[in-house]
Image (cartoon, rainbow, N blue to C red; front, side):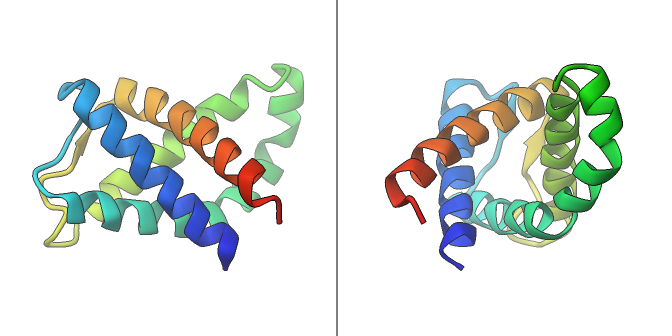
Length: 119
C-alpha cells in the first residue's frame, strides 16, 4: 500500500511539473484531474504493467531495454485516456511527447521517492 501511495505521489508531482513546464505536453484545468490521473496510473501500473512487461520481455531484451520506454509511454498515455472519462479530469490532455517525457519524469520521481522510503 505504501508503494502505491508513493507511486501516486510521484505521478502527481511529475505531471504537475510537466504541466507547468509546457501546456503543449500536458494540459489540465484542475489539480483534482491530476490526482485522478495519478490514481488511475497507479492502478494501471499495479495490475496491467506486470502482465505487459512479461509479454514484452523478449522484445525488451532484443532492444536492450529500449522497448520498456515504449511500454511506459503507452501506459502513461492510456492512463490519461482512461482518466478523461471521469468528470473531474474531463479536460486532461496528454500528447504523445507529453506521455514520453511524463513517463520518464515519473520514473525518475518514483525512483527518488522509493530510495527515500526504502521499503
